[in-house]
Amino acid sequence: MARIKLDLHPIFNRGGSIDTALHRVMDEAERKRIPLVEIIPGKGSGQLKKRVLRFLQSKDMKGRYHRVEKDKDNHGRIFVHFRF
Image (tube, rainbow, N blue to C red; front, side, top):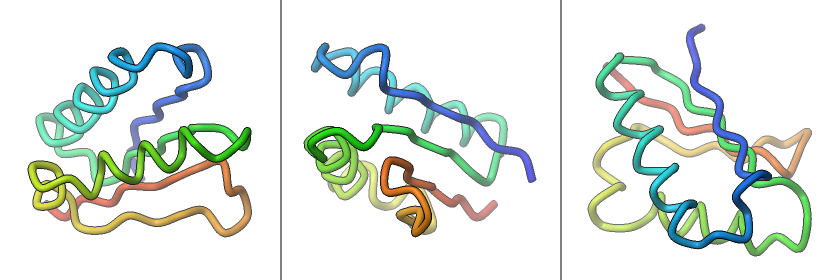
């Protein structure tokens, strides 16, 4: 299955860059009709993961994807599934 991977480790401490990267990856998945986006906020304190989940639950994002899956084997990874 085709997927796009976004690793947030390199930009974890730059707030605006995180939102920009998340918007970019969601737009790319829709544009290219890629059914899976893998977002890696890392394990750390969990704050970045919470921020990503809040972003995905926002009113303007929620209708764009099918579902969000937290990786049960790796809590530092989130999958966003699209249905095309």
